[in-house]
Image (cartoon, rainbow, N blue to C red; front, side, top):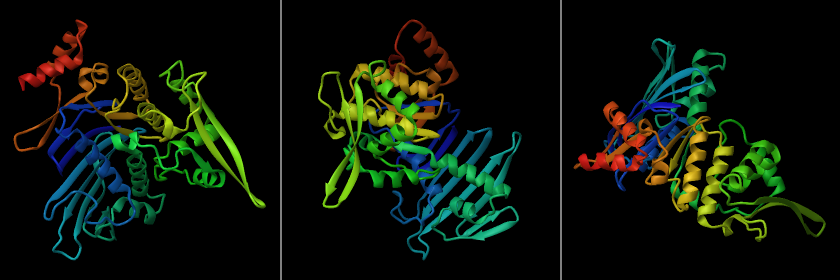
Amino acid sequence: MITSVHIQGFRSCEDVRLDSLGHLVAIVGRNGAGKTNVLEAIDWACRTATRSDPLSPGHTLVSHGTTVRVSLEWQEAGQAFRYAIDYELRLHEKSAIHLIERLDHFDGTTWHETLTRSGARVSLGNKVLNIGTATPCLPVVAAFVPGTDAIATQVQAAISFLQRVRYYPIDELNEPSEESFFVGKDEFDSWCAAQKPGAAATKSVLRRLLYLYHRDRPRFDELKSLLGEDGLGIVHAIEVQELTASSGSEADSFYIVRYRPMPESNSLYYPNLSSGTRRLISILVALAFDNCSVMLLEQPEDGIHSGLTKKLADILRHSAGQLQLMVSSHSPNVINRLKPDEVRLVAIDEKGHTRVRRLTDQEIGSASEYLSDDRPLEDFLLLLDEDA
């Protein structure tokens, strides 16, 4: 679970801090305030830290001579880590990208340096490693330092966590994938064999759902229950078929998946479902399959009926016990199911800079009293907005 974030120089996030984060964090604010930029900055830092290939000058929206800095602190499996990355673009130099990185670990009492990196030089205690100036250092250290070394163990733990921070923007969840109604059996089996820790995430709902069907039936059954009459009530049945197509002397097998919305309705392929149904399925498939440490979810309510949004919000809250959810939202049906200390208010100042804050202890107390009178949290937050 990420416990704190510090973002500097990333788009509108000139100097943004998020502290005292819990399993559920809701980023709430007006359009254009920078909610998406906060989520994308966290995603950028995690993807950059764990990529093994060199960065290019177009890797992020950074102009010449400016620096993006993101620092993350997190806890997992009884361990605590702190990672910071500085990305500076120097177009007039031979090495256009200058990276500074640092990883620290906490022993329960004190923070200790695991590694530091500036340019091509990586310092690992009394060891020094030289790498490409545009190549993030964590994967390089993991590859070259013996696995029994304490530094390698800490770096592997950090990589494992950061790789499982996943961002789900509106567009990704709304668009049906290109391979949405069938996949070849041999192709699917090869993909399944590659599903190991650290494997690249897939956007394909079809492949992830088939994986659950064939290799993790309890989770598949749980997914069916959440989509069915006892849950959201949008899918009566999920039909998985293996078909064979013959061409001359050769026969190819492939899988298809169809969804039956109602007991007596026709079965539909994923692209033929409504956009709201597709969005709900894609969110729940991600929860069931993606093994996130942190799920960065942008406006889960988008395109979904208000009644279903309430049910989805309850599912997300239940899931927050198994992973951390950071959600941006405008929906009263999401906001009114939050606790006051889970809210982070986002605003834009007169210079166009994003500002993020948690409610003060006094505001949390006032909000609790407000809610005790069966009044909605959204209305309380609007009162704060008016007073700002």
